[in-house]
Image 1: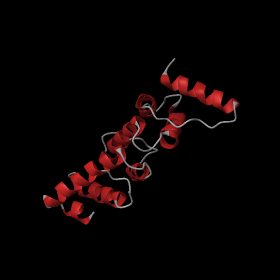
Image 2: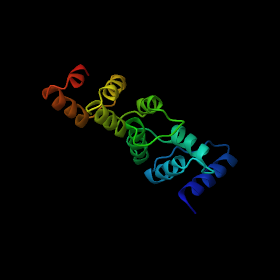
Image 3: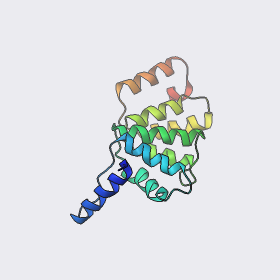
Image 4: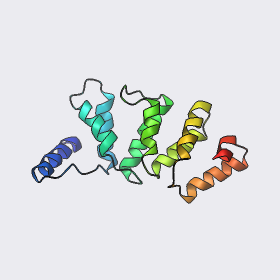
Length: 152
């Protein structure tokens, strides 16, 4: 069975017990969802979008890393998904509670596109879960004269 089929079976078993689906914490399942989302005609595309957006565990899980990486691709225009605009991708990153999402936001904030950098800084201003590695990156960028890092 595929990871996705296993997840659907687990959802069905939990539903019989009156339980909601467990959040997704494994990057391999998120990668499977992303693969189905990338295929416009995939039979499970709509459900995969829902699971990706609403069931992927935030924080520092491997699933969060996979989700943040895909959202970065969408923001940079490297991939497109009709249902997830760059603005919505920033919103999703804002709710991921640190870890991989902050790393992606810092990449975008310190990147070459001023419009994307501004949006990333605006989201970073709302984040409370920055780790020492994150603040070290900001300090280094500030010392190098990066105006947005200084603003943050």
